[in-house]
Length: 130
Image 1 (spheres, rainbow, N blue to C red):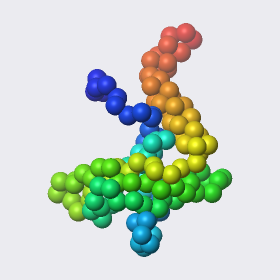
Image 2: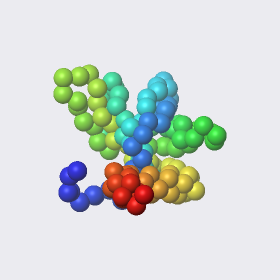
Image 3: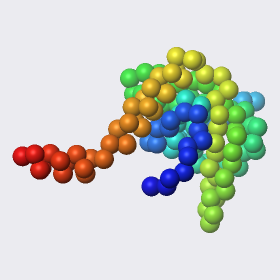
């Protein structure tokens, strides 16, 4: 692991969520798997090279038991992946329901705590105790 200070305001959930997006001015809906979701925004890979500042409609499939999260986002970062035709797209939420934002943040916090657990140490401790 790297020992670099985290600059993000919110914890992230690093698992795929199916997401539909389009440019706000009535573009065609496209679908991607979001790699990284937090209360402040999303990161996904796309074959589209969007300009920073592009405003998008987003529909994020956060839960199978609930409707998709509908919100607006703005492209804040574009990273060209070397030797591919893919771009990493960082998008910050512009308009999102505050309760939805809190729910994403709570899930991300729990995920973060679970990921910090060192299961190999726990398993070793349990085997020594038996």
